[in-house]
Image 1 (spheres, rainbow, N blue to C red):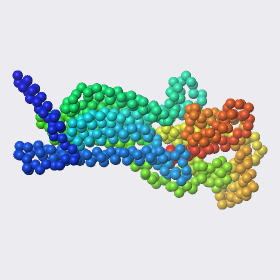
Image 2 (image 1 turned 180 degrees about the horizontal axis):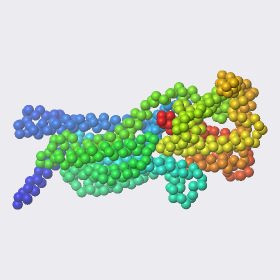
Image 3 (image 1 turned 90 degrees about the horizontal axis):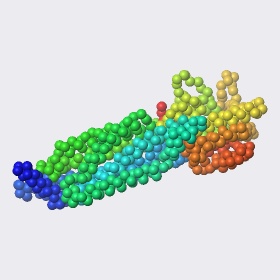
Image 4 (image 1 turned 90 degrees about the vertical axis):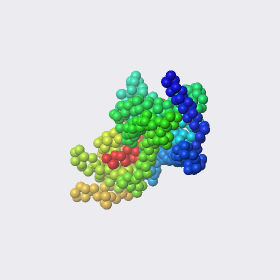
Length: 564
């Protein structure tokens, strides 16, 4: 009997309070009541209404500012990431160095996470701004679409990072043609995913859309079972949010932590994901504590702490941390000028976009490079490098520096650039050495050695260099003759091309279509017709690709290398 009376009393209270929204709507545009004019018995309710009205206005302003903040910072991120040219100009070197890490992070995953955060946080804040029957629908669908999108973006960024790091490791392995076996599962996986970054949207959107359709369908069916007042009474949106957070806490965080703890990238993507996982734990715990400790509005004794600050705000704080880690911090870093980034030094160097002939005519530059390259250094130490094109050329000729650059490029997802340059220099060295052996004694000296006057102490004197026009032209002709590719080296030339240049290349480098086409015009006929290989081919056919790869290295991993 007592249980039945207690049940009926609780039921009547719930029915009375669940209709509170329809009877006492609150929006930011309502006026505050003068509680001194109301009866004493209603004064507490009047004061509570004014408090809710104040919080409604605060949350309404926060919703507008929050949406503008997310949209503005995300658009700025996309602009700066997309403004990175594939092959920049010398005067844009500093901007390329600053902005290239934004593109390496993956624009699609970052934007998708920002969209999810914007939808969820805005709907949660609007739910607390408009105390209406429709507010429950805003909470429900904002949580469903926004929180799902945010979690999906985080998982996708983790998957992308692991895939790119694995591809970089396999690129170092499959540079050796003998290890490329068609039956090898690793090689099959590598060839299937080698252009992973280029197909990000095409591979991700169908999966994202399919899961979203399933969730929307299930949620719509569940919502259709209840009338509007019952939807608010049973708080379907709160239960849905709790389910997402429990899934994230119990399953996703441990999986991401276990997968990422063994890897490290050059741009701190792994660190940001792990920091997000760590900081999400207290937010989820506080969300659960808020629900367990403070009574909701439809209870017999509602708690004003929960009315003024909904439990879902802790989830908003969690996604806001993600936006700061994924968008704000990278943006701030992209504006930061490193003390070693001297734009005047970058503009002064001319070997980034020079051809081989132009490189040979710069005698003083050649002498400086070789003078520095011959300086001895102590065992276990590394040569000092500045952020200049000359320093990069020197580093690419030093085996220890190349090894370190290769390690950095692996973490930058661009190891194919170092591998190509290393293989190109090896091939170039073989060609020139072959021509030197087949030439008359003294005909094939290193560039400009005959023009450099040595003093009595055998030290190089740059001030004593004297080259007339005829001698310069003669040396250029000698080098052009030395850069001819002998027929016996055409197989190695074609192998270099097939490994790095065409679309079917396993280690395709990131160069412009014009540079790729300039090589295909020469070498595709030689691949189809072996007799065509007897024609005169020169190292010049790779020069444009070499220049662009050099620029990619200069603006991606070399600044990190200089700072070591």
